[in-house]
Every structure is written in C-alpha cells, then in structure tokens.
Amino acid sequence: MDDDKEGKIVDSGELAHDWTELTHVCLINILSRLSLEDRWRGAMWVCKAWLQACKEPCLNSVFDLETYFHSAIEFPRFWTPAFERRVDNMIRSVVIWSEGSLTEIRVRHCSDRSLSLVAQRCPNIQVLSIKSCPHVSDVIMAEIATGCPKLKELDISYCYEISHKSLATIGSHCPNLQILRRNLMNWLDPSPHVGSVPIEYLNACPQDGNSEAAAIGKFMPHLLQLELRFSKLTAKGLTLISEGCLDLEHIDLSGCANVTSRDIATASSNLKKLKYIKKPNFYIPRSTYHTERYGHWQLYDERFQTDVFRI
Image (cartoon, rainbow, N blue to C red; front, side):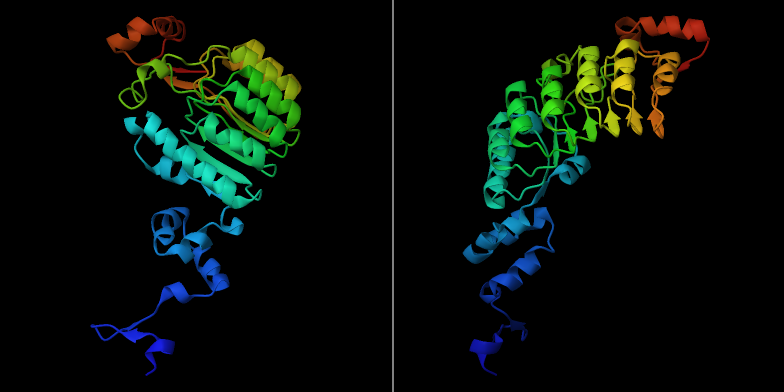
C-alpha cells in the first residue's frame, strides 16, 4: 500500500488519514454539519487550515448561544465582567468573519462593546436576541435601529438599561418588526434568581411599564407576537397596545400584576386577529416574606375568598 496516497498504518493496525489535507470545499461541507459548540471547542483547534475554514462567512450567518444558556444553570459567573468580555469577543469575531452575511444573533450577557460592531457591519440582521445584558444601553440600541433596519424579531428581556426610548427608536427604524420580547424577571417572587443574579440588578427592575407600552403601541404597528412577562403596565398601557398593534396574534402577559381580567377583555376586543393570550396567573404564597413585602395580595384573597388569585 502507498502510505503517501492512501494514509498510513497506526499501531492498532487501522488506517489513519491526514484530515488536514482535505480540500477546502470538502472541509466546509463537513464543518457545516457540526454544531456551533463543536466548531468552537473542537474543529477550530485541529490545525490552522481548519481554523481558517471555520471563519468562512457561510458558516457564520447565524450565531446562536441561546441553546447553551437555556440548558445551563444560571451561574453567578455569567454576570461577571470577565464572562461578558468572552461573549463580546465571540460576537465580534463572528461579525467580522460573516462579512455582512450575519442574519441571526441569539446570546446573553453581551454589552455595548460588541453590539456597536453589529450595528456597523450587520445590515442584514433579522433576529437579535440579547437577554440578560446589564450593560446594553439606549445609546447602542439607537445605533442598532439605524444600522439594522431589517429586524423582524427582537428579544431584550431582562435588559434593564434599555428603556422605552429604545422601543420607540427601534419601532421607527425597523418597520418589519413582528416579534418583540420584553420580559422582566419575577419581581413578585425574586427568590428563584437570588444567589445567581446580583441583588442590585434585581432591584433595578424597570418601573415604566406604561411608557414602554405607549412606545410599542405607537411605533410597532405590525407586531404579531408580544411578550411582556412581569411588566408593570396597567390597563392604560394595555389599551394603548391594543389600539396601536391591531395585527397581534399572540400576547404573553404572565406576571403582569397590574392588569385585571376586565382590562384584558377590554383590550382583547380591539384585537380581531388575536389567537392566543397568556393571562396572569398567580399562586399567592403565605410565607412571612411575601406577606410583608406584598401585603396587598391579601386584599385580593379576601375579596375573592380564594388562595389562588387567577386574573
């Protein structure tokens, strides 16, 4: 057997191939079948040729870390500057490698540092999901709005430095926006987050639910899906949304403690295309902690004479 052409025999008697000699086209085909994690943790480290192949724009049109975050426990280290820098560096690398072909980003714990490059170099972005980003600001979201006008889906859940100003700007510059997720952490019972999320961040929960609702209703008329879990909007804000977003098909109001069943029914009457609405549904804890902090729930219990308050 000609070892130079066919490979070489290893000690086990098996034929070993030199994978570094694959043609570039063949290598791209193989790498495209790997998961993002497999490429970043394995393939990139095989050799220089494989690293260069992993940088091909066709392999970097989508950058999705949400699967990793969704399956992982929320560790305190996720909220550290060091972890944020790692995520930022990954995003910046993908943006550069994509050469403008990037259409989808799903990450958490990034900052203005990486999103500024997204705004500058990714005009074709259609999906941007940046949950749990304490250092993403209105300033950079304004740049995203002007630099990424093709946005169809935006998730800014748990990003407490983003205000209603960003919602207005995004809505004004991104007419194709159809999906908005603006969920807050559970401020009624923050205990699931204590120990992993910094307590000062939990206490920074946005209070301007109606201002955000007004921006959504005025500047996002083509929304089909809207998530506002644990928003502090009231009947006024919900009405503004129902009057301005007539195409809505799906609304999630889980945890929205300041709206009632009557408010929801009134707002829903304007939405002729509505297919699904998730209403607030609370179990009212009897612990001392909740009694002291959320004593107003006792009034609801007495009024409805039930331990489960279902709006």
